[in-house]
Length: 422
Ligand code: PLP
Image 1: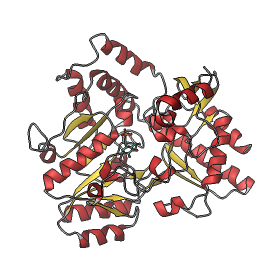
Image 2: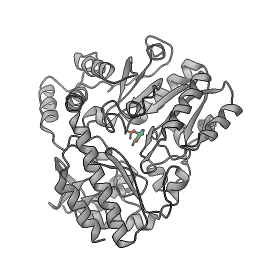
Image 3: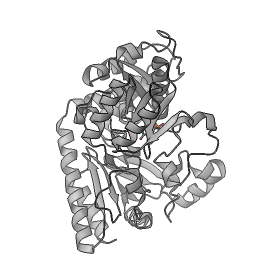
Image 4: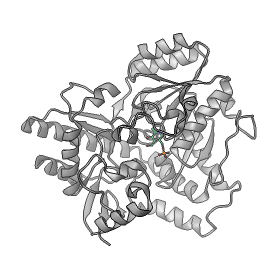
């Protein structure tokens, strides 16, 4: 079947034809290509059309598609069965590897998605502190857990959904909203809700309102306020973990969160998630402690094997990160040059290998409010043009674009050539 036929047929059996809203391209006037296969930095659709992939499955595929080392581990592991719901040495291998190679993770609990990781981390923080309220930041997205669906970024922002129907009032009454990169908004909430705030959860490098790196002073101040108030600081590194640096954004900023959440890259492309942190907090989890969280599929051996192979490859090759930074810099500079030549107003936010082109008159984009001022019509024109011409960029202004280990100089040049024709 052709792309269009598959998509139309899919709509009959899956809402919107997709299993995650952003894939439906609701902000664009084109249908999504139906992807058949991927190798390295390239994807191929059902009609054989080739794309340079700057989405990387929304982050996980930093080592490229069909990476031989990951595939080999998966194939080897498959020969012994696909899952047991029992302790395995593979889950120990990955947990120990993360605890010993990433800072601030004494213990880890494996789950199956980023959403599960963040909602479980919040539950643990509430159980540990015996408090109910949490602070999240407008424009940050931590998955589709009810308590997070207020002022959320990513698909919620693209679809312009104010939260979501189906989320009971009670589920969000303990969710307080602060402004990203604005410490006064955090201080105000702490003054108003003294001794009530269990956790502050934040993307240290936000990727779900487009890429907006947290300012170092802002993050340091949050750390200080959390310590003073015995509030748990959760860094949501589902996207930034193993991406902006092997040790994640916490290492770039040299800040110690109490709990960290991971997903995406840590599963080598398979469904995964994990949360971890200080031993005394993690020991509150069942069966050691009273906070209950469980999962039939958690720690699946195939996922553990793929994750271990990926993380080992990334950790053993620190040059990968300088390479991706170099490619990112080249792309960022090239985009600014095109904008200058064509007289387009834009801001390119970048943190190493995460990037967003904001079509905006603002001189910088540092918050949700500024991100929302972007010209989304212009972004849609850009994304449609790029995708039609074989450059697979996110179909929304409020998503991150990713550079991976397999992107070549030619891939970056092709991006720029296509953009010039916009
Ligand atoms: N946290 C962040 C920072 C994310 O970017 C995402 C997904 O994009 C999530 C949590 C939710 O992860 P998942 O889609 O695996 O549930």
